[in-house]
Image (cartoon, rainbow, N blue to C red):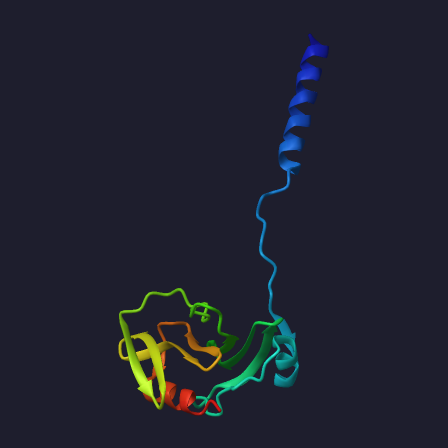
Amino acid sequence: MKKLFTMILCVIMVLSFTACSRKSDNTRIPNPFLDCKTLNDAEKIAGFKVKAPDKIPEGYTENVIQAIKGDLVQIIYKNGENEITFRQAKKGKEIEDISGDYNEYDEKSTIVIGDLEVVIKGNGGKVSNALWTNGDFIFSITVTPGEVGIDKTDMIHMIESIS
């Protein structure tokens, strides 16, 4: 009886170790962004010239430059916990939202800035997301956290300053 009990206990322990040692199926997609020291480095990785904003709202400073090989450049400007992310990507066959912003906003409209039609989204009169195309490129500006947003005038100045 003692041998049977010991054998059953051993089987239970082996099964529990096997169950605990199984690999979890938490497969994650690797981060495609490469950190860059300069905008020039990002342009070389992405394969195109970047038209970044010259005007950023007061208090925000350039913090991170990143690129995806042959595809996209992003510049992140920080002000404390708040961020503004500028992205530029090559336009494909379809116009896609490159912002990475999946929040839902109460306000959405299309405004005209020069020759550009810009879709802006936000809440409470503040703009948290702008998306537009120009030539062979898609551009986006996203403010996070989304509930903060920036004044529409500041967003327009940023877009106008992209050369």
